[in-house]
Image 1 (cartoon, rainbow, N blue to C red):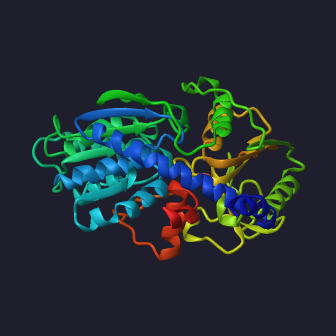
Image 2: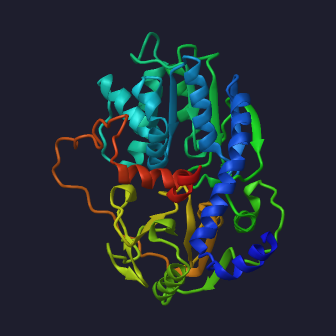
Image 3: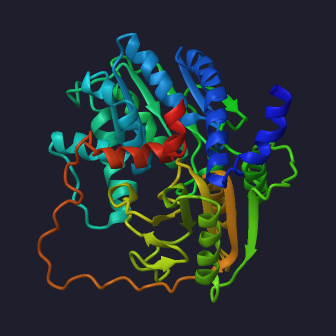
Length: 419
């Protein structure tokens, strides 16, 4: 009977759609990664470590596990990152620790703004780039270098996630926020190849390399390495008979039509809009994309903070910069069709956001026209008010927002139903 059933059932059961296949891949990856991450966390929670890991090596998940170990020991843990989305996702992953006052999770600039505002030393924001890259960090470094207690709140451990986005001179002063700046544990995690904001080199802690991937299909990992050969990671070449990575010849004149075709094919395979992320070197507004504009079967969600604006049957559209550190089941990358100075690094970062499928529309985006800066107002006698104002260290999210952020942190949200 068993032999008869085995012979008959395959013919009776429907062929699984791609979405179901990806769901199973995600469950397997998550299950096998948990034991390894737990083992690594036990090692990295003893002292000070500087961990460099490639895409998908579990750096952010490792940060959360280490934070929980330290909190269980009674330590108060400060977690700092650069990217807003990954910071909010980490806040939700550690919200019980924050509620218990055992953890604080913040972006670097939110932390700087709040500390300087508390000290009545928040600089005036006259130019955004200079403000975030110089005025805020330099004033925070001065504040934390002063003798005596410059801040009222101290911590027992420090985690810096996505540290490649933060300059060394920004990170080192944060040690003054520790009760014991020379001995309290510190964990710094980064992938230097993803340093698309600035070049830096961190030297705090014992160096360690994680040359592995816990979430990406090997073909995607190989494609990312090929896009940026100097990324520093050794990746074995693999065949791709299943078409996990697909390159589509495109152009500035045809990319919108090509994108619609690709989204239509994904819809036929059973992929849902929330599983897809379209990534480009430039913002959708710069590319002439309107909120809700349809490409194939789905509209486009151009909300910058996409977790605040998810809409039914809309696909998220983000820049490489905004989606750093996160992931999606399927990524469509709109590659520049001009000589972009960071083309290799952008492609590497964009490709590595894909967990299961990667589609590259090659040479799709034309170089945007540069807009001349507005002239300074005439006759101004007073400086503008600082912007942004003091920001909350902990945000609250509704159920839908939580699902969206956590899905981009670890996998499609359907994966979590069975783990």
